[in-house]
Length: 147
Image 1: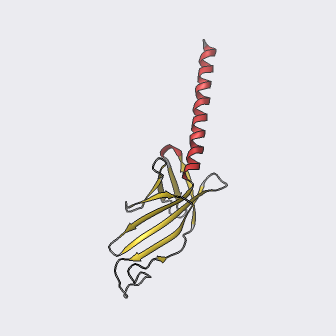
Image 2: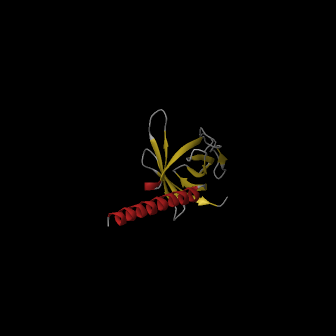
Image 3: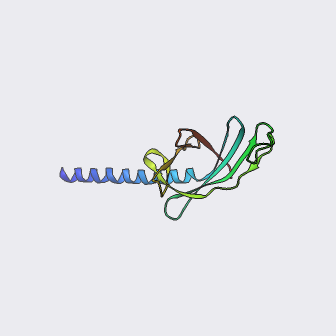
């Protein structure tokens, strides 16, 4: 009887280990790719594109590869590039940042080295979206796009 209990616990442990490893590998494959978001404020329209790639350490490289904006109205006095309505300006690519995948709540986390502040990207593999929540509570939703 004792032997059958041990065997049952061993099988249960192996099954849960195999399931957790396979779901982690599935999530890693699902989240890699390019994601785009669109937004606006009172003055501008925005289009941003993120790229997520696995790196050699088992973590992920996240980079904003395109930051576009366009003014809603002409304003030659504005201090940035957005002076003419409808003209899209590219602000270039952002830095490559390293994120850690937390499988239990399906998030990518970037920890700022100097402040220890953590930026969280919530992943929804069913809807193929990533939601970034900024420090002020604003949400940016990125939808997966074809490469």
